[in-house]
Image (cartoon, rainbow, N blue to C red; front, top):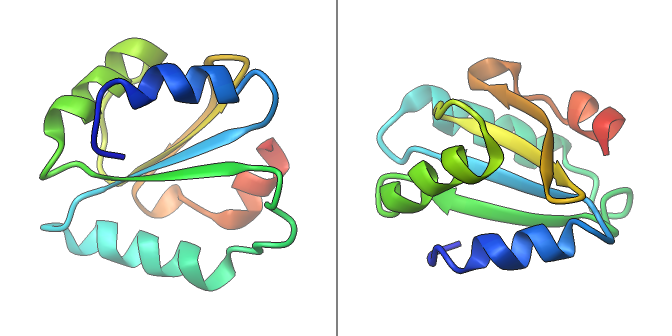
Length: 106
């Protein structure tokens, strides 16, 4: 994700399928750990009907701020959001990010 306009697309897509947004800080070891844990456990087949977005929030901090405004969440890093029907229905941050919890909330 690299443009604020993508948030409108995400809201639209979320009306028909869940959307996951992973906000990652390239400067944070906890963010790297959370990302690697998620990559190791992610089940592509089980998530085939879920659209996933990755945001480098260091490069695109403006988009991270916009996500917080649009979906009514406090900015954290790393952070995962699940969007359904244009609303954030689940969020987790830091080492609370876990595939099992994400899949339960999809």
